Length: 253
Image 1 (tube, helix red, strand yellow):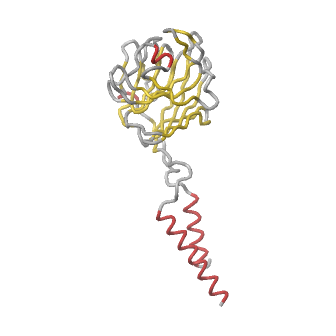
Image 2: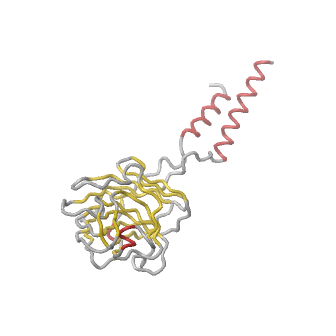
Image 3: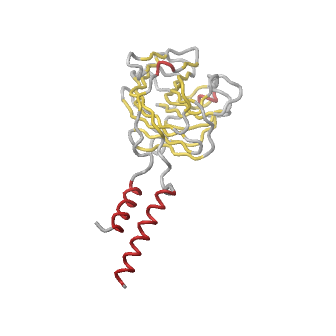
């Protein structure tokens, strides 16, 4: 193969492979995660890779022993009962003690099965993402996304659609300092830009028992779509185009 074609082929191959596309997922050991919320019961399975929260009670969080920014978390979630219709979900950027702290700055992703009035307001069915500035008390703020729980966005197709009983869903979360994405069954539901503080991943239940989070994996988060190629790749492509130009001029001479 002529030299110029070799360079061009190498350059095009490099451009076709995203730098982080080959990030390998790692099974997450949940045995060192921490519980917040006294009215809860998080039971880690023998495989240390799944956990079930059994109690229908006040807000509770089960959070990671590692910081989450720059990582993606994936797994499955299932409500194992048909006797309730309340909140399941996740927290991002959570700091130890944040569940009841007077001043916080973390992200709540919650999914309610059905509309329900309580605390003189109505909690809406569907998937939503909110910023939490003063913990998650058992009151109207947490129940209806008001006051210190500021709703930022609702799901693209699940914004007013609740989860189904006895149904397993695959989830994927991407958490960076400037972007959060949430996919359910492979479809992106939430994609929001902003400024987000680093902290822990966590699972979240509110007034919903018998929920299992399983097959939990974490990996390096992929780069944003449309990212400009890295300088080394650009240099390789430039060399390929230069070599192609030189060969053409020689042929014309």
